[in-house]
Structure formats: structure tokens, C-alpha cells
Image 1 (cartoon, rainbow, N blue to C red):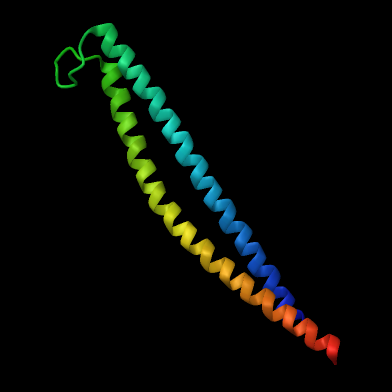
Image 2 (image 1 turned 90 degrees about the vertical axis):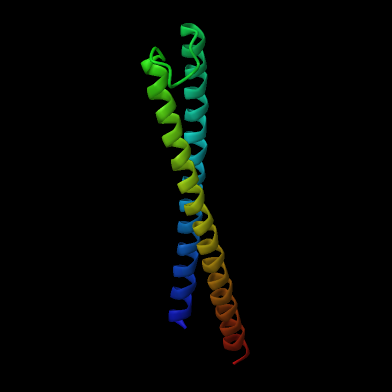
Length: 116
């Protein structure tokens, strides 16, 4: 029953691949959130230094305006990655179920061979 063994190995590889993808998404989200916090601290510093906290004010610091835009873009990216993470979690659950099913079939075939 080589084909079942191959199927089990394939499913195991797919599970590990999906877990790796999920971990990468989580790491990217954490890094983007960390970068956003750093930018928010820099924005607060620039606003305090200039005494202007209204982004629509004509003398609002250019750096703070650019940092605010970057922080907003990072937040959008985090939300998009969250959608991808949800999809990756569902895909992982599916692949894990397929792996469990293939493993059970291989185990059953192994028991049948032992009895014969």
C-alpha cells in the first residue's frame, strides 16, 4: 500500500506547510503592529515638539504627517493579513482533517496486512 503511505506523507507535508504559512502571517502582523506603535510614538514626539497636534493645520510637521500615513497604511495591512490568517486557519483545519483521515486509513490497512 505504497500509495497510502505517499498520501499520508503528502498530507503531513501540507499540514506543516500551512502551519508555516500561518506562523509567517502572525509574525508579519506582530511586526507591523510594533512598527505602528513606534510610528505613533514618533508622531506624538513631533507633535509635542512643534506644539501642533492637528494634522490639518498648515504648520503640522511634515514628518508627523508622513509617519501618520505610514501608520495608517500599516494598520490597513494588518487588517488584510488578518483576513488571510483566518483563511489560512480554515485551510489548516481542512488539511489536518485530511491528514487524520489518511493516517487512519493507513493504520487500518496496516492492521489488515498484519492479520493476513
